[in-house]
Length: 336
Image (cartoon, rainbow, N blue to C red; front, side, top):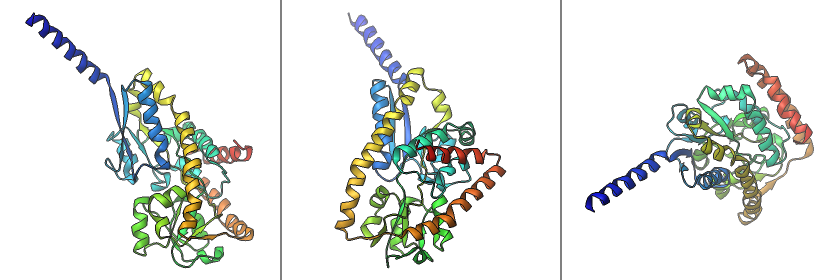
């Protein structure tokens, strides 16, 4: 009897160890804290685990695996399997997707932003661009139009932006530079300290980031309608890790993307934006609304010159830059 039980115990342990060995765990590198910007990743983890009965799990870390500006590097060496980053952190490493950061593209809502981003991500030249870093573009993090929140005297016109030190990356920074602002690129987590110390006087963010990174706690003014664009922040996976998934795991991951993005958009619109207006009132933050003439002037100064420069620079890199630009602008015009 003792020998029989011993064999049964050994068999049970063997099954347990085999099951454990078969389970797949991915580490996911995010930053800051859980917020609207990360809800699609949180939802994706939930869906993948449900669909695989817990055999495929995503372990999400907020800053414990890498700096946000180094997430693409971490993916490239396999330090973790999934990560989120923003194209403007290192445009030279991911030039193809910076087409989504050109100023004044006219993208009006989060669903359109998500659809156009996915179309760009699925373009063969874009996939090849990110594959240089062993990265596969999985899904976007669609963001509403950025606006400025700052300290000190509120600008009354576009001319008052001259000399304004502002955290603004990519095409947004270039657009603000056209009217004499002084844009600087820094990680979102560094913005509040830089504002407190006087290094910058304003930051260009979507509403969730103004709240999450403490800008709204000190801001005295906010622009309601500058709307220069938004940054593009994809979620990527390590190609080797993706290719090593079983068919069931890959189907669970890929098949959860649309639901995760839909959940993200609903969450952003029904939670984050619902809080933003009351917060402005509570903290008595002055709302700055620029005139139509001012906005038209800014757009004429920044939009087409930025697009032309982007196309020229990226044609020189060997990218089909005109084609990518027309893909984006064509979808905007068609309302896709």
